[in-house]
Every structure is written in structure tokens, then in C-alpha cells.
Image 1 (spheres, helix red, strand yellow):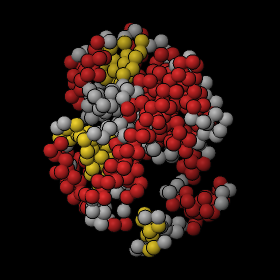
Image 2: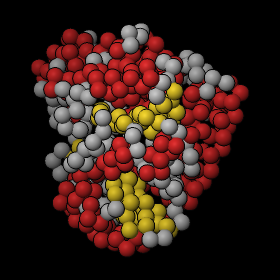
Image 3: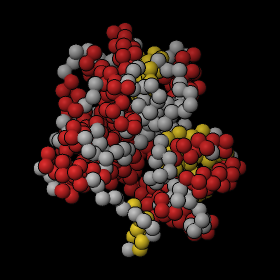
Image 4: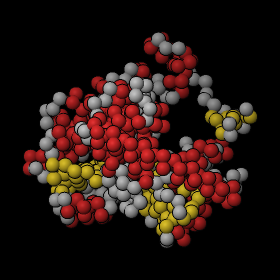
Length: 469
């Protein structure tokens, strides 16, 4: 262990920040009130948990702690439009994303609306041909299906042009998303995104701290609000908390506040799930009869769901999570397992090539950000590989898969470096980008990659100190 300055030490190739000694009175207050060991009380205080009510919610999460879904200012408009569509039998399409958060959010809203008698379908963009988020192709598919109402989950907050196009085609849009908004929001009928300015009422903002809900968490709030409006028993939604926990944990959002509540009860529900698809997935992952915690979700269940979206079209995963047929569920789970094996092979090959590039082209003594690019890399795995490089070198990392004159990139970051804000400073070099603090995606002209690399290195040089690395 080597000291590297006041409050810091180096171990295992990483710089660690040593937490300050917490205020003794605050520690004693928590230890006595909640009958917890002093060391646990110290950890809570150092995490900023000192308010007794907040600590109680953290230590004893309960479904009664869930906030009123109508803290979202546009929630009434969203629910009114869905109720209108239900009454008039208008066709509804859920527009999702191809990661676990987007897949579980799509499945949740589909199951809820389907049970309410809606004429509902879903659409997930193809990662390789369309990329992330709304596309004209997806909007045109909605039109061809006769859709009058489109509900986005885990995407759409930056889709200004696509929402305008949908309106021209007579399609109303409700945006539910948790990614960072651009300076100008889409002109949608309703926007549910706690990160969008003014989206959450002032009195409700403390219930969704920092916009930490995952996409599936916001989809759950919409489902809650809809059930309330229709006078439905909210307990019916509890059977879907397994999906909410799966998407929340897989998206690596902070497990505090509402996220902690839905994760605790969702993991309990996951262990006794009635969904044939989740049962089949648990079985093929070797988890039958074993405890399922966050580690099992992140490292065993989520990768199998993600695999089909990474390598092509994620709709198989939706069918898995929504089917009522056990034989179909088992068959799809086997496909997901096979795709995950193939994904691992591509992942390992890409990582090897990326590490070779780092050895040849990156100056780890000077560079505080890593940008790698190659033709032939698979778009579906570069995000995973970027995460592995961040773990190894503890630097913001962007991997770009180049095809022809354009590249598609995935970026991952470290504490202290807000990735979306950094990309915003580089937007002159990018075709498009989106994401949040720790993860983002981008498109870039191939001849702009070197300029982007140098600009991001300058941004990281200003933002990061040697202790951050």
C-alpha cells in the first residue's frame, strides 16, 4: 500500500479516497436509534445518511415508502392520453431500448397495458442497423401498424426531430426516460424524466434524488399512476417488481431511495416469480434453488438478456419475459444462453485487440482518457469492453466500431468525470450522442475520430486530477 497524498492511498493499481472520520455525535445518534454497530453507523454518516427518516427508509425499505407517481408534472397528461386510447381502442406502441433496463421497461408496460385490454405492441430498434433511441424507421413502423399513441421507455429524451416526425404522421408521443436531456426538449405530449428541468414537482424532487430512477423505474411510476386513475388495486403491480428489480440492478443506478425499495421487494418476487420466462432464465443460469442477489442479476441473468440485443434484435428477450407458455420460455432461454456464449467469444477477442492498441498508442503516464477505434469491431460488445478497460486503467474510455465513413461508439466513465457533460464539450466532433454520467453512446464521422480523441483528452485533463485516477 503506497500513500499518494492526504486522504489518498494506492493499492491494487488504483487510487483510493480515504473517508474522513465522521462526526461522533451523528454516529452515536444512529447507533442508538437503530441499534446498529458503530461501524455501520459510520458508513451511513459517510454516505450522507444522517436524517433519521432517511436512515429508517434505507435500513427498513417498505413499499409504503414509494412516492406518489403524480410528482411528475406531466403524469396526468400521460395517463389521460392512455385512458383515452384504452376507451377508443386506439393502437398503442411501446418504443423501447435493447439493454436490460429498456427490455424490462418495455415488458412491464406491455404486460400492464395488455391486462387492461389495450391494443398494444412494442418495438425495439436494431442495435446494428438503427442504433439507440427513436429512428425514422421505427416511427414509420408505428404508422404502418396504425398506431396513434407511442410510449417511449428508457429512450426518447433527445429525439426532437423524431417526435416532430411522429406528430406529422398523427402519432402522439409520451416520453419516459432517465437519460440526460439536451438543452431543448422534444415537443412530446408528455415527458416523464426526473433529469428534465421542471419535470418533477418541487415537493417531489426529494423522492427521486438526482433523477436516479432507472428507465424501468419510471415505467413503473407510469404504471402506478395508470392503476390509480383506473381505480385498480396497486398490489397487482407487485407481481412485476421482479422486472423492475432486474432492470434497476442491471443498469447500475444507485440503490437508494425508491431504487432500494423496488430492488428489495423485486428480488424477493424474482425468487418466487410466476413468469415462465424468468423461471427458465433462472434455471439455465444455474440459479434454481439458490439465493438471487444483485451479484446474480449483474453477472448471470442480465448478460443473457443483454446478449440478444448486443448481437442483433432484442425482441426475443421481450418474448421471454412476457410469454405465458413454459415450453416457449425454455426454448427462448436456450437461445439467449447460446447468444451469450457467442457474445463472450467476441468480447474476449475485442478486448485483446483493444489492449494491444493501448500498449501501442496510449501514454498512460499522460493520457487521462482513452479513445480507441477499429474497423471490424462489433458494436454490440464495445460497451462491455470499455467497462473492462475502465476497471483495468481507471480512466474514461471510449471504444468506436468503424464501418465505412462512420463510427459508432460506447463510452464508460469513472467517478469525478461526467461523461455526458464531457461529450457535450466535444459535440462539434460528433454526429450525435446521448447517455448519462457514467455511460454514453455516440456516432462520429471516421475522419473526426482523431480530433475527438485529442479534444476529449483536453477535457479530461482539465476535469481530472492524478488522485482521481
